[in-house]
Image (cartoon, rainbow, N blue to C red; front, side, top):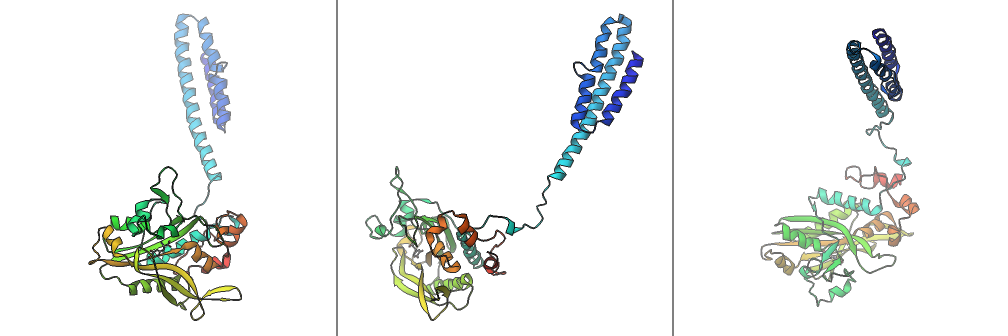
Amino acid sequence: MEQEILSLRQELIAAIEGADTVAALETVRVSALGKNGRITALMKTLGALTPQERKTAGQALNTFKTDIAAFLDEKKATLETRELNARLHAESVDVTLPIRPQNTPGRIHPVTQVTEEMLTIFAQMGFDVAEGPDIEDDYHNFEALNIPASHPARQMQATFFLKDQPDKMLRTQTSGVQIRTMENKKPPIKIVAPGRTYRRDYDMTHTPMFHQIEGLVIDKKTTLAHLKGTLIEFMKLFFETNDVALRFRPSYFPFTEPSFEADVGCSRENGEFKIKSGAGWCELLGCGMVHPNVLRTCGLDPDEYQGFAFGCGIDRFAMLKYGIPDLRSFFDADMRWIRHYGFLPTDVPTLINGLSQTAGAKR
Ligand code: DAH
């Protein structure tokens, strides 16, 4: 028996050392310790020995068996580590390598890009970004904005109400975020609030879902001059030209007094739209000084605080800046359209590099 163990030991150790995969090692294990394995077979011969012989042989066999099991485990761990390392190496991706945007089909939607452009500008001017819910209640969408139930302004906005909750609706404007902001924060307030808005409308320049950005500045001495300065500076940076003229026409919004619509100087020569002064005018946004009723509703004393607000369509700014003719096409999810009008993921707008400098060239 002793001799048999010794030669089998050498044989098995050589086999274990020679196994170069986990699968090959498993074959060795089964051939030694499996149900029909060599060591198992030796164990079975113990029965035929005398009790004295069985004792010594049994002990020797057990030690042998434990040793081989330990060798197997040790080798298995080594092989597994090696195989894992090889796999990690083969499947590794160097995330620090630059991407090849030309080869990736994904594009950033113009609405996303333009929203980023706008936020980049406002952030640099010191505005915080605020958000509100798409499903809004009557109070924030209308009531607190000085639009009571009987007010004709409610008819101006064809609202999607929720079926089972008559008080809830898809917000028709981002102006409700003004209320939510003033409810939660004391002045000075300086926020912009981009987001989706919804109205029952559908033609070349209207879709049931569209995007607005709202601005709100409240402090003790904020005036119409600040509103005008902010908007002019914004237009220059956004349209990337200094030749910007703004015109304020008296208008009406229930939540501002006085209210204005702002137009920007533009030309349409040879079908090409251009921001420039001295030619025509293009309607851009609504704005005004926040109505005392709105301030009062939000717990602010209009004799102490005042400020301005503005709101405009992000999609409209995208159409103007990038010459996109039909708003409906924005939301068709047509790959050809997004490849043509979309932006490369690397075209992150920054004021230093120029908001659309790289975008236009590589699109
Ligand atoms: N909420 C208005 C709309 O959807 C736009 C607007 C006008 C927002 C004047 C304002 C504002 O903040 O002061 O038509």
